[in-house]
Length: 151
Image (cartoon, rainbow, N blue to C red; front, side):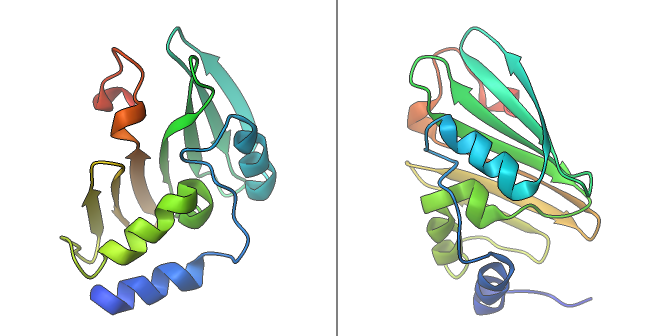
């Protein structure tokens, strides 16, 4: 099995991401509709007191959840799972550069990436046909929301 490390992972991430992307993580709720259109996904909303979860299922079966704060209208977290990796450049928006930049500097294995910075935390892992991950803005979590709630 091919081990992807350092610059190889950086190039792979850049190659897999299209040139056009929306700023989902950290963006306003309106970016959710843009993401849905880009992914050609079906969307369901689940409203709670502190946030709304926009769950999108792509034609390939990958499920993407975007968490929008009720107080600010901002996407404070995204999570994904499925047979295919979603477009992380699209989901992470401006924070995608943090992931790419960190691939040479943080703990990266061939199947798992973990970036933990004060402004953003990104977990991504899996293997062929079984990917999962989440990213969130620690300073933007609504009061009472635990990281474990973001699935």
